[in-house]
Image (tube, rainbow, N blue to C red):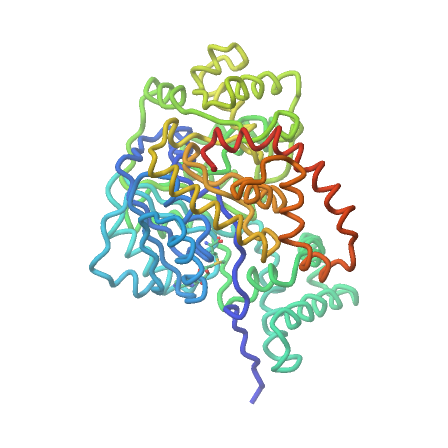
Length: 511
Ligand SMILES: C[S@@+](CC[C@H](N)C(=O)[O-])C[C@H]1O[C@@H](n2cnc3c(N)ncnc32)[C@H](O)[C@@H]1O
């Protein structure tokens, strides 16, 4: 009998990333852009398979509402619970499998259910449990966000993945760490390409995809390809699957993809516009851009906004700039790449957003300020979407958040910054009650924030605090580093942080 190594992906903890696509105010904006009604108040939110629980904790701390989440990895649930204890926010974190969750009779009804990085990596029966849960527990008018690997962009990799998985199971020592098995499996497939594998010759796209993957970390590759299931799915099949729970496709959180002229050439765009059925149009778009990853929004029994209602919903949406203008990348990202933005056009929008100490501005206010060039509301929203696709412009959840939200976010952020002492800033985002979600703050900035909260009032003291926190770890990782040099570099960085980013983070309610 052939020997089979155990491939247990749970050996490797999941990353600590925050995902803006799961943010309630961003999802509401995505629904408005698609032209559908969705109300956030009162919010009752469920995240399925929350990983380390960074996103759910940030949302529970930063938004009014009821939050539930589940993940069957007990170590991850324990970490997520430690964040919830720190923030004091109301959030139920369950260590249930999807099957157990679907069987519970104590769940409330939700109006938002999200699952990111799940659909492709679970079994058919788990997908059925989720569909049943959504059918029973998502309220009419409720919104579902689901991301998944698209069959269109990944089809050519299916046989390679199968072979890599088999290699990890059947070759190498049973005691090898999973990351070693993964690296060997990738190199094995590469060696087949090197000796002229016919599949590689007839599928040049697979060769290019493998090349790109070889540059990724072993942990990423393990999570992406070495769980028991890896089922890239056709968009049309995902529509049919959630159709069983009475959900209809309404749009995407890849908002740049909804703008004309950004993601494909004119003739393709014209062809797409000639298709009236939204599902067929989307399936065609997937093919035109060879999509690899989809981020779809569904609504249960959706209700279309009239053109006037949609304009009002967009004009009322508020935005905030979470960094200095010079720190804002002049690039917009769509699902297929990046496009440079004309500073002559976009810098005035950033200046308007930065005015009045970065106070939130509605689309209506930006239009009144005369910085938008669009001829209609949708085009004006498109200009802001280009900025939203970068890392520092956000949809606002709450222009004037309550004391409670402020307190929850400050407490959570203090904990996140404390963790930077030990983990090298693996958590890259903190909670803002104004955004109602996360904003990125790098490792040294987290340490400066912590120092500031502990009374370091000037750049030199913040830098000395930061160095004291990390000196031992940094020296162990990177060799002996002179303390004076490190502190002087950190002091420069802290000076820029205290005069630039710190006041903005305060305006966002981060501390
Ligand atoms: C690829 S990770 C994604 C985590 C998180 N959503 C993110 O994007 O960062 C998949 C997560 O789903 C969880 N998971 C997988 N199968 C599950 C199941 N049957 N029941 C509950 N959780 C499951 C895993 O423990 C893991 O945390």
